[in-house]
Image (tube, rainbow, N blue to C red):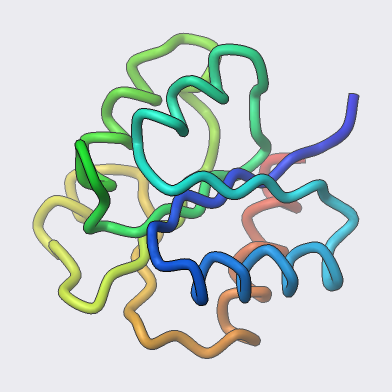
Amino acid sequence: MSKTILVVEDDDSIGSLLVDALSQETAYTTILVTDGLQALRVMCTLKPCLVITDYLLPYMDGIELFDRVHAMAAMANVPTILMSADMPEKEVGKRDLIGLAKPFELDELLDTVEDLLERSA
């Protein structure tokens, strides 16, 4: 089974940047979807090793997506990085989430990804 990172980002340029960087810098397959509903559909057939999600998304925000994903028994331990220019600190603090402020440093993101994937391996 191929190890997969699921990126949920509705901004095309940021989504493309993340997919390119993760594809080049990790051994993982990276899948990009643009909203929470697409993410949930993908996770019905595929369990990602890591989810990287924007906070502000169409249909549901990143916190609601996290809650819905982690309510599924098979997904309860999937690490998640939440990215936002306006971080909902209180909500992030209540959950086992990593918050990453936008704009982010690509190296910081890649280090965080590597750290989370090593811990969950």
